[in-house]
Length: 307
Ligand code: FE2
Image (cartoon, rainbow, N blue to C red):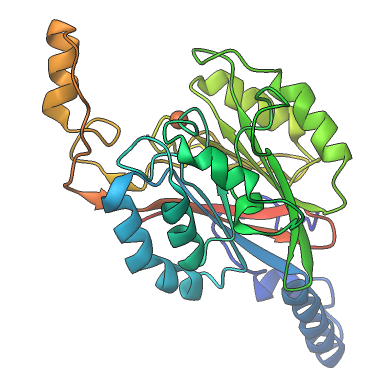
């Protein structure tokens, strides 16, 4: 990792004053060296925008409205989003997946709601023979049973930069799955790309933080999803993996994790069956921007975004 960039959370490029400090005796060589360093820095730079759980129509609309300006503002190279709640909070349909891809999202991750819309099974099975089709760029957790439809890992290129995306699901307070730690080991060993993002879709903060430490130095980023509440613990771990426990929801915050608040409060009060409906107010887009070195895959910074 570039020591200059390590830990500079939210700072997108090296500070000129620090770059010049190593050559105090020759201002021309100093300027040339600095320019060369900055050029190589920018040439090797990859910026990933990861958008937290897109919830229902409000979430899809704000992605449509804000994604172009976010890509421009942050000079984003690669866009990944969790879309498991994009169909009114429960699952994702083939047309909605296509819609999100058309907005500029390169890979969609999911989680425990992936099977809520049964037609997504057919979508997964459309991937025959094309390793980069939309069906292959929609992921389900890799540590689900291996013979289920879909896959939990994708490897492709954006421009000339190879990258990989791994989708995992936690086991604490969630349905029984295979071990996400050991599945991550296997998948990372099978990837050629240096730039690797892991979406850890999990309930327990301890499980997500543990995976971050476990994969530190082996992947570019471990980002948490599922709880829909953004956490303020984003950082680059010592060996170069960007980490955040939960990116937060992209959807209506005038509710309870995306659902109309009166329905959820009522459920807690009387425990009677209730059909959850999406909330609509206070819509926000939550994301992180991760900058890394494409040659090593090591993260330089991670910055939270809420618009
Ligand atoms: Fe979830």
